Each structure stands twice: as C-alpha cells, then as structure tokens.
Length: 179
Image 1 (cartoon, rainbow, N blue to C red):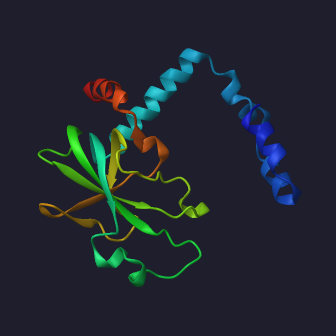
Image 2 (cartoon, one colour; image 1 turned 90 degrees about the vertical axis):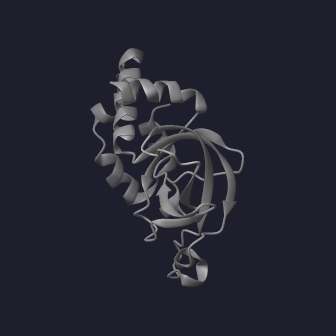
C-alpha cells in the first residue's frame, strides 16, 4: 500500500481533504515508481548529505542514560508545556571516530524522552545500544554542554531516526566520507 493510500485511510474530515488535495498523483506514486538501483543511489545521496551536516560521526555503544548533567535541562528549570521534551542524556563510549571527535572516549547526546508528537522524530536511546551515530551540536535544548567523566564537554543531538545507523553501516559511512 502506498503512503498516499495509507494517509487516505487514516485521515478523515476536512483537514484530511485539504492534505490529500495537495498531494499530486506524481507525488503519490514517487515511491513506487523509482527503480531499485535509483532508490539505493538516493539513499547514498541522502546519507552523504546527513554525514556532511553532522558535526561528528562515531561508532560506539550507549554506556548509560542519565538525567541531564546541566541544571538548565532538569524539569524544575524547564518551561512547563504540554510538549515538554523531558530531556535525558545518553553517554556513548566511542569505539571509532569517523568524523570530528578526535581523541574523544565518550560523547554526550541530549535527547527528548517524551513520546509527545513534537518530539516523535527524535530517536530514543537505550543502554547497550550500539551503532554509527551521526550527531550535531545541540542547538535544540538551549544548553549545548554536558558534564562527562573528564569534565565539561560539548553536547550533541541526533535530530532524526536516520542519525543512528547500525555498526555495520560504518564501512558505508567511511566510503562516503572518502568520496
């Protein structure tokens, strides 16, 4: 079933009619019409763009999840809203630096633990999770720092689900970085 058909089934009412009216027939079938080889080439292009926009790219494992290490992100210092992000901090043990994290043994990643729709695109981290992480400096939580074992450090975010790849994808990322 195409995205268009899924959206059509899920949506009801005038908002759905407005949304569906803006989707052209060409856009409806774009996913279905692309040849398999072209889809992989687009994936490489998208991945290359994600790598280029990342401040650091590391292969590692989440060693711990903790409350934010800086007071500004704790709930008592946050503006109260129905879209409260419930900031948490994942500490990643760096096993391999692919871009921008020279000499770092660990990095801190702020992430919204809230299941709220405002934060749905942000991945949630778990202890023991391994992967290739494409991270950007934290400009979202308003507090771009964290405290790690060795002292204050720059905090990062993983802004989309595609910011976290498998450890096997590290070879593909290396190849794209070499281009």
